[in-house]
Length: 320
Image (tube, rainbow, N blue to C red; front, side, top):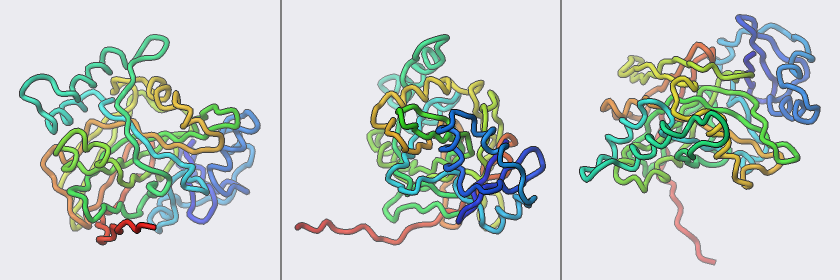
């Protein structure tokens, strides 16, 4: 089952090639809240509402009607985060940006820790790298612009899988589903010094257009592209899913939600699981107007966003 969120309210369900409106549903978040409150499964809550009018999902996407799968009504209660060095091959990209002639880089050390202890047979494994993207104001929907700050040195795509979680009243995290994600970052700033990683990640990220309800396939295969003036200037396949990762999803989830800060009742989380593929590693320098496209068969419609540059609007601090 795949769900999509309409801007302004309304939920679309797709099962196979059939897409239809979910009767009486305003948001996917409200459906998830109902599932948590009743102790049921999200798919059961959706199925119980029956099938509404048939729709052309691709046409809705083209017309700009689809939003990020879930948003919190108060963006301050939505946390956008992620983890890196989790995919087989990801260390070579990061290592090249932070090469140290004196020995193994911290990136490579972290990657090897994941290879050796990221998929424990039982119990908890080694903790991964972790980063903060921002609050819900950073969540961008399909077709919406990815806005790079005026002071940024780069704005590059990162094709990833993200999961959405709702925290129950007792503090239990409930996974709602998975979507495609573009973990948009400033790789030039990151390359200056590894300690600038936190700065490089404070950027918007895009999600959708479809939410996969249920388990994530072990082997996810997709394609990431950059278009300029309508022509593809770079494309490359990407892999995700646990078969292509050095950490299990359970381990990544444990190390995020072990913090009480991230188990506050009613909060919404979207957490990205990393990638080993990015155009920056192949020498691409993006420009305003470039279009990113990420697609994978398991997620249906592609995620596309155009790069824009913000005006110079950094304020001066006012002293009271």
